Image (cartoon, rainbow, N blue to C red; front, side, top):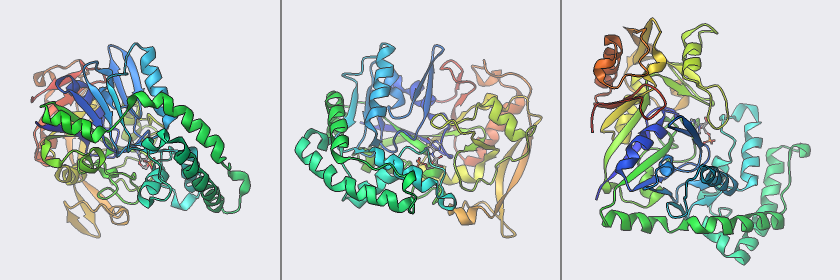
Length: 434
Ligand code: IMP
């Protein structure tokens, strides 16, 4: 009667998908509780690569039921596209995928609102442009939010859109600040028809997922929660305002999936062996050291380009101050260190152990963006390693310098390391714990 959560402890893209995929054979359910198609997980199985942004990473396992919880925001064309992509590869999801009837729907006007708001230079957050923030705004604002369950009441759904769409058109024109050529007005009836068309294709998956999960826990099933985005992008505890609009920390599970926190007994914090970030916002250990510098070398070796947007990710050294902060908030019991192989070949590797902020040294992470941007990293430098470690299977296969690096991270965060990943495939994994 217990559940586990896999959560990223940096700014997302920590390769959580691989950990979920590795662990999911021990679970009956894999559940997403936050975010939407802004997440990007890549799962590589037997040389085949699956790029998912909305479906849980566990969907590749035939004996696992994948659940999209009520806390997720769903763009139906994206959902259907991912389902069809997997069906073409022979995966039958009809009995193993459940979509919450309480999850909120993303409409094209949300995507348009995201795009227009982002084009207002100064206030840009660097979003993924998937309409995530505007949809969550509508959810919390209540007047314009529409849930998946409403699709199955066509008259009610039509009436709601007929009231909402004219308001949205005025809002979009206002955000565009009089530049009408930038705005695409929406037609309520056309949208209603489009979405009612999706309704029938979604129907086989739509369920009361809170009940489903509560029954599962009562029946002794094993549940794995998969956080989307990283803890530093959490709307409350991340580097606000440069965050996403949902609770990516495990705290989001209770509200975003309907399962009380007391059932979650294991929290696995996932970190990269270095740090990346996409979009705007402070990043103390960012490496801006030119085309031949460490930052670019890490980007190239780690193929650090966004799964969703293709944007080059900002790269930097491992930040132990930030990860200690998120590990504590997440309640992590252990960490997994991903992409260690990317650092092979660097003459030295650095870990940020403290910040210098307004002339003072601190190990405290100020999550407010305006404070964090005044912090400078204080580094500890460790020797690098040359060997290609991508086929290491045991800790003993790693060069001494790589083992020292892993040990130092574990010591600084104060948590044991349970998995080290040295490549994208399932086989390229060193398991240290359970
Ligand atoms: P939004 O979630 O699209 O609103 O974007 C808000 C911020 O979160 C931006 O900086 C995005 O780049 C970032 N973000 C959202 N999803 C992810 C993700 O899955 N990985 C990394 N960054 C993300």
